[in-house]
Length: 108
Image (cartoon, helix red, strand yellow):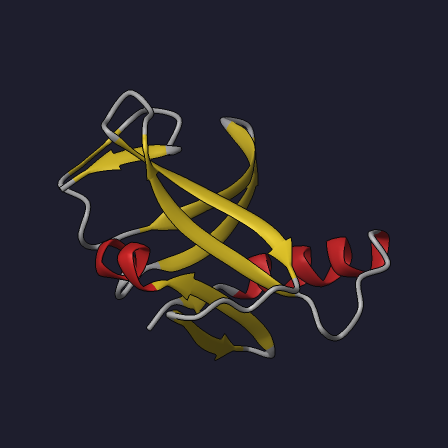
């Protein structure tokens, strides 16, 4: 399962309204090769549920992950920061053995 922090939930809901998204949209999270640590997180709004996708809902936010990415993301929390060191979404991933300083890539 993937969870969403309260602050990430609020930010997603704000973006949902700002982008005039329909109830059919969800947050798609995936992992791809790349980044300084080897694997990169990807996140976007989508409305195309594909074969093999897994869906989760936390705090009213629907998250969809492809089967391959799910192996890397189980137990991860999606969070959001507005701090001095950077503003944006980030992933608290218990499976990552190493992350880059910007938090956009990781390795196992």
